[in-house]
Image (cartoon, rainbow, N blue to C red; front, side, top):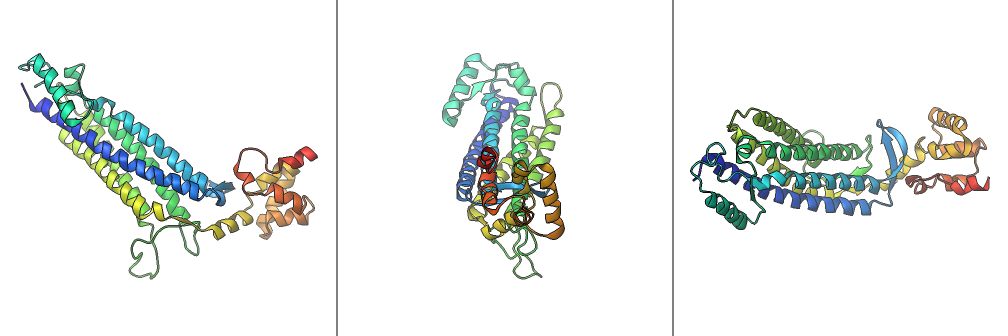
Length: 336
């Protein structure tokens, strides 16, 4: 009544579901720390950047909140990808026809497995389909890949913001976890974000292997399941371990370099965007060009050229105003 062609896939489904449960718990833990950091940094203003060029101010807390949001979506994607893993082909025997498996046995064994595994397992509606197709695995792998693409992007952001300490951005400080260089004393490398990058590369590569293995199945059985499952379980394992290490050894200890961030905002030409509604695009463009050419601040030039008063600029260039929807200093427009 049993075959390796139904016992092994069923066991693999259970193993994958258990591994995913552990991963989701770790992701929930990491998400909570991102949320705490978003709250911690909500008062910290920094310059936003597009195309790596100065844009307009944003709160550091808003950036970390965005990281927690994308992680929420990743968790939902992974949770949803489990749906077809709950469907097992136990009782399919060799090719899905159920030859030599009593129908009562098929029903009983799935119920028993659900009870002892504490998972909502059900028998697949079509055992032939469930025996020859492996898209349930590729669906999970795709969700893992998307998650790691997002996490690698976050890691890249952290590495860039922590670059320095003297001649980089130096907007945030990452915890030092190891001597950075055998030749350069005092150097601190962003090793934990780099771990996330490398996990992403591995998971993306594993996903490609999983896709090829799933596609290579022929007729009634996909004999490529061993390499497929090896890569899938490896992806889940390294993500679980990596996320916990990253959260404990990096994310929790990130600090903001508030003096540097404030300096960047004051020096940036990007804040001219907030002045634009008050003096017009052409006048704002002239101020911006002069600021770039002379190194003077937007605030200084607006006062110097008689474009706006210092009092008006205090309202318009309020950094917190510029990080919310609407026109900074809108009350001035109403007066005029």
